[in-house]
Length: 367
Length: 96
Image 1 (cartoon, rainbow over the protein chains, first blue to last red):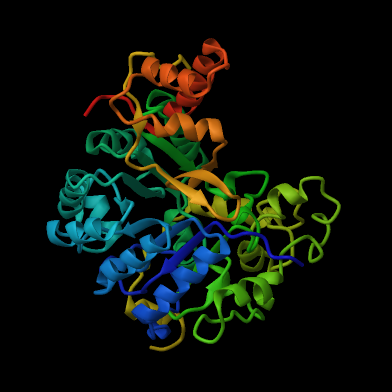
Image 2 (cartoon, rainbow over the protein chains, first blue to last red):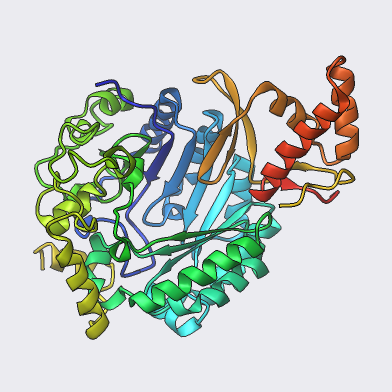
């Protein structure tokens, strides 16, 4: 099979992070992955990614700002003509390091905000951070960066969508991402605590849609669905290893943040092979390209090349088989498991499990 | 969506970057989460969007560059492209 052109690289520079958000997309066992790629290795990766056709580079984490070599990485990424976006929690940003990033050629900053309500925001982030984040948002704008504000939605903040939209407008964000929690990794651990009710989600979506029309041309508003409430699955990542790749702090090349969870796949590392070789030949990246791997009801479905059968990670997590139809799809024989999860979350409360080293060790059996 | 007024002084928004795409051998407008492949006409238009020229002046300049093409046709192309970019937040239209 000829490999398609990748457009986007998410470079997870580190899993270190001062925040403890319970919906974090980093793997639950991140504690065991501490050997980060060096500056030279990342620079090599950026060059190879640009040669493959990658246009968008997201410098992510963890908190990428913990990397002391961030200005050097940004400079190299810009030399490769990559559109370079910093995805940050903001708590380590200062006027000084932001200026350095600006001088290094950073194109764009994406800042996370947990809520407009200080108490909820800090309960979710797991540390005091509310004032600092607002201060940093203003600094980002003062330095002339385009700003995306990213808010992960869940049952404790989804009713604040009107206030979050007003905050985005007040801060002068060019883009506001209202991104419902995706239930993988830490999000899945916390599903019962975080999943909103259907009524909450419906209301938030209507408000976001109205605001999108109102702010058209000044602030783009994206509303990322909770796929649990959908009848048809999302075209996850635009299809497995089609346009998107994610590289972990230790150098493994994945089709998305979550794919580590699928057993039996062996992901290749940029420590041992070139990115081009991995993109074309990695058995893990080829595992779900095309449609040969599909089972019924996907195989004979007219939408199979539109939604690609949904998400492979979710198929494994909910159906126990990564090649199954994503149970979010109403044609899946296991669709009821999704409806049951929604019903359970409507009726029950659960304590938050924070994303930190201690919980990472405990949940992966290293106490 | 109403057309952008001809008296505006458009320039690309800070979040958008025009780059040459070696793979497609075409210019590409890149911005957060997406990119647009541009044809030669669009590139010619965008290169004149400097925040100084008005849309009217851009049309006049292009009419000189592409002598023989009807002025109205050029005006329509310019308006159509800029309106499309404006709705996606890819233009700044105030003189700074």
